[in-house]
Length: 189
Image (tube, rainbow, N blue to C red; front, side, top):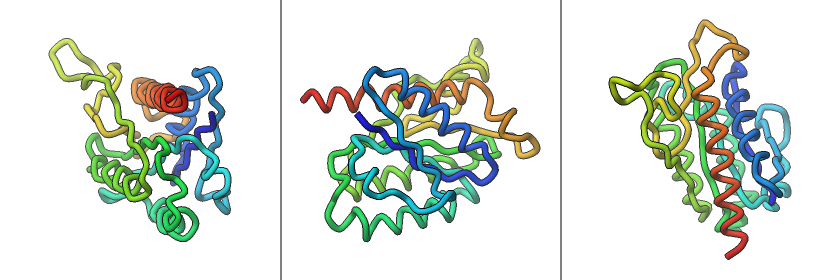
């Protein structure tokens, strides 16, 4: 089972989240990971076509996906969309911003809509919102309370080696494992 993670990262924070997602995928027996950083050169469209699932990731800039990730989406029109080459593949998404909220939901909605236009099957989080009670903390999984995908936050004045915090990265790892397990169930059907 091949799961591709396609992402953009401006300062390394979203790349760190992508690695956490990949770690979760690797926890599932039989799952292989193909990591595609859109900023690092031409996209291997054949590898994406062969993938059983594609997990999308982008930083949230000004409440939207990055320009490079948007370009990837537009490029997929001529390479995959017209022939629906990604139809019935599993899809999911993650995003990172400097602000606690940062309008990250808009980025995840953009990714989910993009996946829907390709006929993909979206997998969100099934974790109750963390840090949502008097006994909760920022160390809880899903501390941002997202259902659509993983939201992480990185302080603008800290390097990617320091932030996002561990609970955000563990939530990303959880998503990778969830996508791999879901993909495996679809392969059995």
